[in-house]
Length: 323
Image (spheres, rainbow, N blue to C red):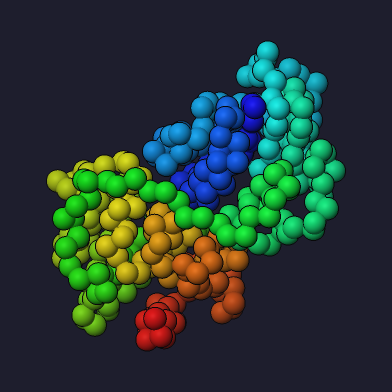
């Protein structure tokens, strides 16, 4: 069985949200040949590949499936002489869906325009709007397989030996801070996170800063303030393997973060996050049972950068008291 999965673009957080879906799809169709394709790029091919290495046989990036009316009348050179038993459309932009549907296939799944273009219909009325994104993907599986999958499984995370002895302090006192995100519009100010780190250290917590490549500019500031950045050594990242950070995460009790890729690494490693949201939706992008959230609009702020440090500390203190 040949299956084509289409997603527009996958940064790390986007890719992590799809891991359990892909792993489960492969278990339902173990003999399938799965091709994963994107209009732009996918972290599943690079950073996250060790999590799905036995699930996806082929990647096609930059596939020219665009939201273009004129593309409807062109052949897509990326799919010449290809045919699929099943195409799964993970996005909802009509023109992209129509351009995707031109690829030869037997069955086509898409929730675009209330399943207008899909060979599968939502007869059981599964939710596809304003729900946690991983649950949405499993609703796709429910419809395609004609089975009800009650619980979303955990990601199978391979052991990463490089992470050993990077964090040796007591787990219950370890708090991580991840100040980055894919977009600056999703980022609370770094200086506020630094102040929170100092505040929590005075309360007796061990504070670790998790910095991605884009946050390297904060590395010296963290080190000069005696904060450990366990992913870094000698001014370089120790490893780009996703299992390295996820293994480190298992030594942290709580992560303070924005809606970014690192937050998903921790949540999928079974670690709770305290997550602040600005332009994105906490209902869709916080893993149920693993995330305490602040939606800044609920407090009268339109932008995440305007959310005050004093209010953040107040909410965090209440959470730490009950946790």
